[in-house]
Amino acid sequence: MNPTSTSGSRILRVLKALKGYSLTGLSNGELAAALYESPTNINRALAALIEAGLAQKLENGRFAMSMAMLQIAHAHATEVARAQDRLNEMNQRLIAGSR
Image 1 (cartoon, one colour):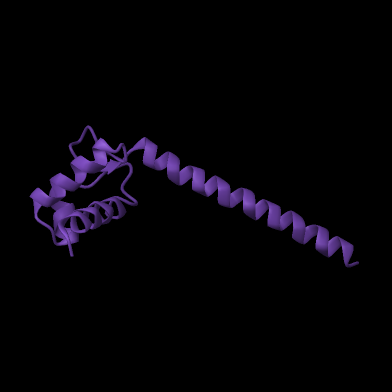
Image 2 (cartoon, helix red, strand yellow):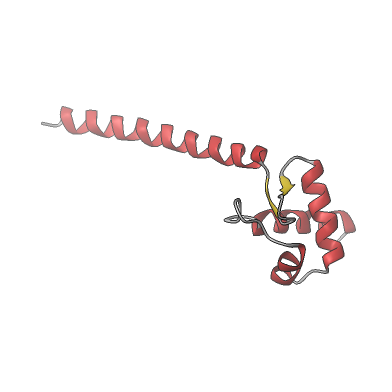
């Protein structure tokens, strides 16, 4: 595997590991232990995520997904909810028409 894909994979693993810690965040050490990576590699991954606007350092010194990342997640959830509403509406019309 080449270094680019290794670092890219690490960055994505760090981003995934931040899931569920938007309020409290995770420390560099917690991320390193959870991902079996060195703290230095975690620092590099976090720096890339912060530069891309997908992670942030909280006031408590821990790391979490950024507001931009949460907005991406919210937009996806909204899209899925709209699609579900459309399916429910179609289903109701189908049921009403079959009576």
